Image (cartoon, rainbow, N blue to C red):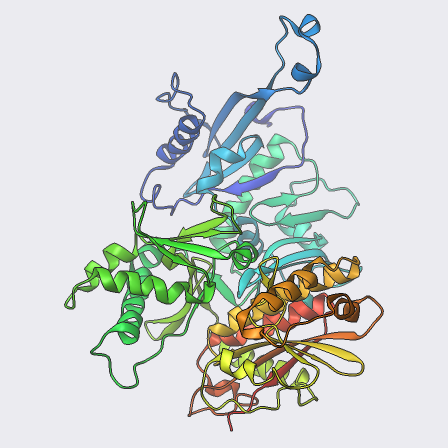
Length: 598
């Protein structure tokens, strides 16, 4: 017999979200309390004070507790208000009203949500941003026909990739272990429709499924079918086994991520500070494998040229840095100078937790990007003898076979893309990157563009021109977390240069040349005929090849090629893999050079 409480006329395509009940502000609270916390949080944001203490009450259907929240928010005046003269608009209300709607569905220990209008602002701070992808791991056989895939490389959000696939391509063909899917569109298999969603009448048509932060069957359903869908999702997540879509899994246990892991990271940062700055450090102190980059806005971070490091509440006398490569050490120095010689770990933590880095672009006084200092830190740590990764201010673990797969693929990448030309023929025997680069100033057809910026982006460290090809070479010493920085440099520079070149716009390279000519280091090496130099890069001219170059800085592994398995830095390995794949996706030629140590 039909339940009259489910009876409704409309049918719509529905996106289902999930509330993260492990959120630090929600953990341990009842479902009823959590729903009303979210509603009150939204009312506070929109300054709705009259009803802020009114609680929503549930309607219970077949054990599902439903809460409905609707709010009409006056947003702005329609543009017609300014367009019409007062004689035509007098007495008329042009206010645009935005509907905020959320339907909460509480099923056992889970809270799902359907939103409309501005409803996203109600759940935004508390949603599970990988719900759709995580739920689909309970359904997939990896044999589904895929339409499109958006991924982000674990080496940074910079490496987000959007791809559309030809008909018949399967999910298993396009996933790889160094990427984390963020959105997938695919064809819902008949097997899944008939097994898990048999209560929905799909007819005979192909049905698409979109999975991201939400789960979205692209087929109109009734409320009765939505009700069954909530129950079925809960059943599947309770009884089925997950099949992972990536080797990386974000760790969401707040007791670990907000407590245990942060403590381990703080200990690592303090030890690195003491090993770098303390007068009592040993002759050969351990060097931490740490990269320093903004946790979410990498491209914007690379465009900045001034950085302010500030303690909590500090408004003046803060540290200013003009080279992003020096921010990390400058931050450690700031903390070190605030502490006594016998300062405890807790005293270090109290300063480090409040430390912030604001980033600025050009002469703009408004900060461009910002974050807490330790959120910029990318590193690999050990927890209970297993690797954990702090990347983009999130924590990840990996599957057991990850290292073997990554070592094999990294070796393949280096060998497959190893440059056949002896472009960097000078050996690197000690000294800085600047000192090594400067050896090529007097070499014919070489230009040292190190620190010459165009639009706040470095074109390359060294440029070499042969009869048929121009090589843009990016260089780092060491095969550690700095390879992530090197990878980002290669991709950002390649994108900026190739887009400019293909559009016939020389402004990027023009700015690089002007910056090069202004640098004191390049006195006597200036590019006099700038126009003739720019003609080298015209479309249809010489081939452009991008070079990733590095050298080993450890005695135990003097040669990296074919010895990747002997190196510890997993961040370096998957950064290299992701860089090569990203360049290949854009059809940008990429070669790899290992610089000789002797």
